[in-house]
Amino acid sequence: MENYLTLFETYDVPAAFWANIQLTFWAAIWATLLGTLLALFRISPIASLQFVGAAYVNIFRNTPLTIIIAFGVLGLFGQLQVSLTDDFNLNFFRLAILGLSLYHAAFVCEAIRSGVNTVPLGQAEAARAIGLSFLPAARLIILPQAFRGAIAPLGNVLIALIKNSTVAAAGSVAIEASSLMKTMIEFRGDLVIPIFLTFALGFVIIVIPVGLLTTWASRKLAVAR
Amino acid sequence: MTSEAQPSTSVPSGEPLVSLKHVNKHFGDLHVLQDINLEVARGEVVVVIGPSGSGKSTLCRAINRLETIDDGEIRVDGKALPAEGKALAKLRADVGMVFQSFNLFAHKSILENVTLGPVKVKGMKSGEAKDLALSLLKRVGVDNQAQKLPAQLSGGQQQRVAIARALAMQPKVMLFDEPTSALDPEMINEVLDAMVSLAKEGMTMIVVTHEMGFARKAADRVIFMADGQIVEQATPEEFFTNPQSDRAKDFLGKILAH
Image 1 (tube, each protein chain N blue to C red):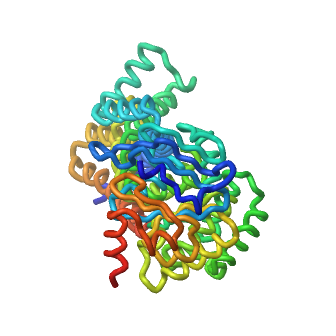
Image 2 (spheres, rainbow over the protein chains, first blue to last red):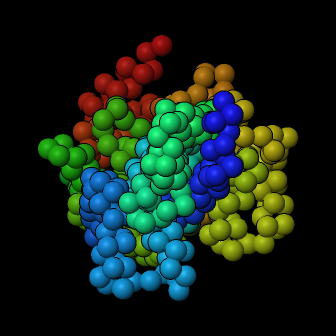
Image 3 (tube, rainbow over the protein chains, first blue to last red):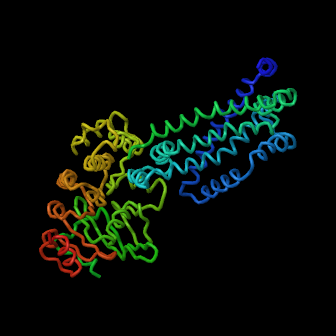
């Protein structure tokens, strides 16, 4: 046990988890914005926008996240010299956020679309009948109800995002949890199993409240019909 | 063509507010509107009746383009219906619509349901819209429910709110698509009363309904539709006591038997 506790003197485990939480936080914001825009495209009456939305979702949803993140570092940064900041390490961090956002936006889009399907057609007809055109009708009537109907699937996307934030390791983000676990296992062969359990349990502790919260919120915020 | 034969007693004078000329629509193989010609004068109350599947709801919904038409022309206040976009939205703002299933905005309060159109479409100040909404809600007798959500109201109350919501846009014409068909029997009259008083105030109305009592009380003209055609039109008195077509006689025989 004493042996185990020395791990936390040598390695800053909470800081690693904090990095994953930060990756998740920013990627969740960007993925929600982009995913909402894509959902708007997919439900819009304009065929070319519908096509763009569908194409995006089908490409990014079906591409492995590791491929996207690795491309961010090796392709975007390494070869194409795309840089999101002058700070070397922060750049990898931001590229990882970019990759996570692009990937999860496809899932956010589909979650919102499932929420749109919970809104009866009559709501859109009533909105149009009082003279709202597509965008105001979507913003004022359809999306607010769709989000409330999509809390559970959006929660699932968030849970997947929390866990997938460890894929940032493939994007040279060395400060996050899975990278630290790799280092610790390398140097502390005597504690391999406890190290694994520490990280596994850490994610379980972060994820379970998110699941409980979204279940509670989806009941609490359900639109009464 | 029977649809051309308008009885002399109810031919509207002057420019019609709503006019449909040679309107056709198909749902797949079903020819749901067959060369429909109809003119509705300012202030006129037209009741459309007919068996289900006769195209009467489609006709009503086509007038604010919730249903597109295949060919023909629909004009509201002299202007042809625009195909899409802002112009169509603007025209819809002038055409009030009341649905069978109420369709109140489920996430907004009763008051917000009524103020939303005036504020977001017409750019009315929110205080002014609130006063307007409360006076309309009072007129239909649900002003004491203003802060509740739609799901907390009875069907009859919801439908009266829907009428207030449409009126808040100060429409030129009101369309009612079977407004009492989804209501429990004891709630039908409260909605019909609101509609009768609206008719008495001179609102132009096109009402798809099975309520013969309303037709007798408030309609200037009854239109009988069957199989996508306007089979017969007459004053309520004439239509109910002396229907001309066999189709109408058969229909009235079935619904007035009890």
